[in-house]
Every structure is written in structure tokens, then in C-alpha cells.
Amino acid sequence: VFPVAATFARTNGFTLPRSLDALTFFRSFNPQEMEAVNWLNENVEGTPVILEAVGDPFTEGGRISSKTGLPTVLEWPTHQVGNRGGPEPLGQRRQEVETVYKTQSIDEARAILDKYEVKYVIVGAFEKQQYGEDGLAKFAQFMLPAFQNEAITVYRLPQTILVAQPSATP
Image 1 (cartoon, rainbow, N blue to C red):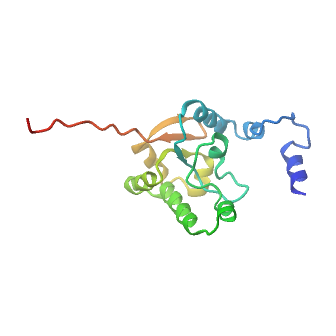
Image 2 (cartoon, rainbow, N blue to C red):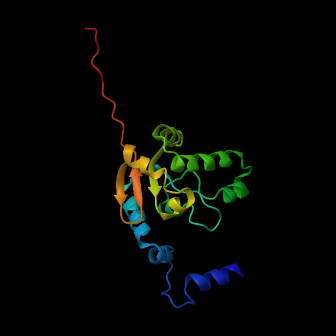
């Protein structure tokens, strides 16, 4: 029943244009976030880890990762448990993602971001809904807004540049 009902719902009773493009619905549903997806696809090289809100099945959790192919710390824990086994490490990951978004401590957030080698942090409506807005201001204090519009900000950790110090011995 689900495939028929979902197809009917996603196509507005089959009145929307038909396409094999899986992003058609997302473009119409949330064009501002699609701008962020496009920016990431066009400007990010390699596969750096992103952080975004964790969700339950059939929620927006992992929405940016799934549209860019970039790895994220955790999308849908129940999906991962079903495919990969026990929930123990996933519960810890879920808690750590929540901590990064909720804490007001830059050091605590940075330690978790470093642990998972996160380079980009997503702050959009779903993150605000999942974690509230109290801890979000800290990102602007130690990260750079790589992309921003009225609905979403993609923060980037600045690159660390190592500078060689002259030796004291001749």
C-alpha cells in the first residue's frame, strides 16, 4: 500500500510533472535548502564529513547527506541498527550530535567535531526543530559561514595552517 499511497501523495494526485529526477520533490518542497545542496555539490571537493540533525525513519534526518553524497555522522539510527546490528555505538553518536547542537561550549562542540572529523555543520529548520536554538550561536564564533540564505547556514571549520618555527640552534 505504501508505494501507491506515497506516489499519489508525492505527485499531488499525479498532477505534478513526471520525472526520473529524485530531487524534483525536494526542489519544490524546500528550495532554500536545495540552494545549499547545490552549493555543496558545486563547491566542496572530496568527501568531507558533514554534521546535520539525526532523524527517525521518514523524517528529514540526513537530508543534506542523502542529496550530496557527503558522509554524515548519523542519519537514521533505526535504519542503521536494522542493517548493521546493535545500537550501542549509534546511541552514543546520536547523543554526541545532540550535544554539538545544544551545548554552548565551543570546546565541547569542537572536541566532538574533531572526533568525527567533521568539516561542515548544517544549521537549518530541521536542526532548530530537533535541538532548539540556544546552542546554535556558538558556530559563528569558531566556524565560517560557507553558505547562507534565509533558511539554512552551512558552517565550515577553518583550515588549520601549520607554520614552521625557526629553530633556536644554529
